[in-house]
Image (cartoon, rainbow, N blue to C red):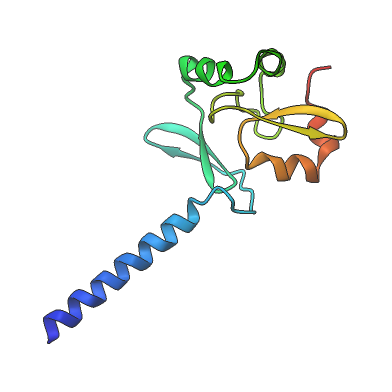
Length: 129
């Protein structure tokens, strides 16, 4: 009986650890962190519960931008960077297009939408004319 109890206890601890880890990786988290750290020797930026890798793959960025309609792709290429994270558009997947104060803006990821809508003046001022 003692071995069975120990195995169940270990399984519950493992499930709890996985649950905590998976909640921490949820991109719908509402907290923004601007902490920088080192992971695998590369600088990363945590944002909205996930990390941005500062080592960008130009081919992957081009591939993600190519998935946009022609007009949007041209606008995203002109904008170049996400105004919230200063990350290259396309570095986190296909850029997300949102309208803020009547202006179309491209973001690196879904997690940036809440921040730009909460502080539009701050981020719209960073965009090219």
